[in-house]
Length: 453
Image 1: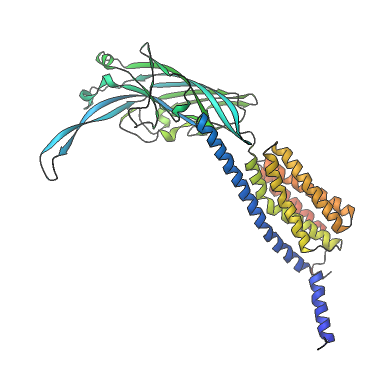
Image 2 (image 1 turned 60 degrees about the vertical axis):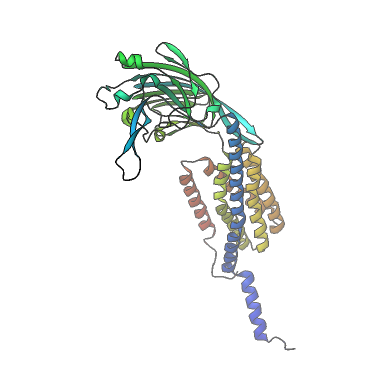
């Protein structure tokens, strides 16, 4: 066999020394390891989404038995009238017959006032929770008829078949018989609606206004009260020429949404009150119309009852910073390695990276059973202790291990502060990264990067 020449030995020794001591190669290796860590980070984000889907399924199951989110539309006064359509006997023929059909003219309230009380409750399906509520709403106002004497259809109006309808998303959740005070008489609503021009589902009551039309009566006051269950949110449509809505609830974390925000609101730990005053000038549909019209559903407004802490949303925000956290931790190990002349194998970097990823699975599982802040603290302390004990065995230096634990604790605290600060997260994050970069530049100012040692 041929023996290596002195030149070959010298080359292999140089290559081995370069591989062992090259700072550039170490940085390149760490970059590859960080890219590898993207795989478990992606799996963690998928896990969070899967838990969110399960929570959503549990909430839908609770809503399906208690009551779905509710949108209240109405009341609307509708009057049927007869039209006659030409139906030709055959194509091209001049002979036809008139076939009667029914259409509806809909009148919206002149003034509409709603006064509602929402009593929330948290229901559980397994470990998942959902917000449900009982609502008691009093609705009052009046209809004001326009002058219909010049309408072509006036002779075909069936005033004796007029009805008042109220739209509600989930009829199964109505708790009591709904009655309306109409012309000093109390009448009960019936299920369903004769016309779907304005609303998709609801209840109605027949009101014979033929005698009042004969008297040229213009103003029709009404008042009603009904109780119903719902979940997540409650909304109203501003169909009055003037719509006035007042809501109160002991729920401390509301979210006002929809087409209109309240003009007055008070939110505290004891609950909230909110008031809306909306004019017909603020919406796109008229006070009376024939057939259907657009824009009624889009004008809905109301309030959502939000959970005080959405642990999955916060866990997802934390996971978004996983690559940053892994990178900073690896850089700490790297600079300990080159400054203190400690040898760290790539496998050891990978094990530390996996430990950092396990933090998020601990956070997700713990936050399902306790407050998010407590879960974050327990998960962070666990990973800091695990990593620092492992570093002690690697560095053989207690001081360096304590320093690593302190740096990781600061990083976890930094990430937690960013998660908590929604509006100022970018500002705090930018300042934190600037400080980290400044410290890094200061510490490494004397390193000879072109040296192999």
